[in-house]
Every structure is written in structure tokens, then in C-alpha cells.
Length: 106
Image (cartoon, rainbow, N blue to C red):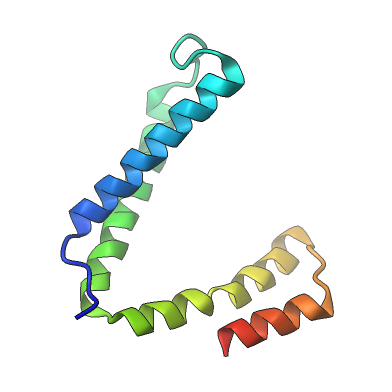
């Protein structure tokens, strides 16, 4: 069938792995995980909640889309990313990169 059976499992797995990687990165870079915590939880909670809910909805929607369609849409994501990089950040891309993006999308 090629469809995701559980959006909750996908979101949980994604967030758990992100937390593990973040804890390792903070430990390596700063030497302690909780000692230097000065960021207020209330300032980042709305962003974290929004991100988690959007992921949940994204994974839930995958139940209705087959794997080949998911792959086509994920591969075509590169074109808008390049356009927004050019518009928002002024990024310059080589002609070969545009050609590669087009060939990946097609």
C-alpha cells in the first residue's frame, strides 16, 4: 500500500531523535546540557507547538497519498527553495545547479 499507518508514531520518532541529537550537540559544544539554560520556555513554546502540530498534520496527510506521489512532490521542492533563496537571501546559483534542479524535478 505504501502509506503511513500512524502519524503520531512518525511525529514522536522525529521529535525523539531531534531531542537526542540536540542533547548530544549541546553536550559536545558547551559541556553541559542544563547548566547554561537561559532561554525562557514561554518564548519558544509557541514555535515548538506550531512546529509539532504542523508535523503531525503533515504526517497524517501522508495516509491519503501514495509513496510515488510523495516522492515526486519532495523532489520538486528544490525549485521553490532555490527561488526563495534568490529572492530572500540573494543567493546565486550556477547554471549547472539550475539544470540539476530541473532534472531532479522532471
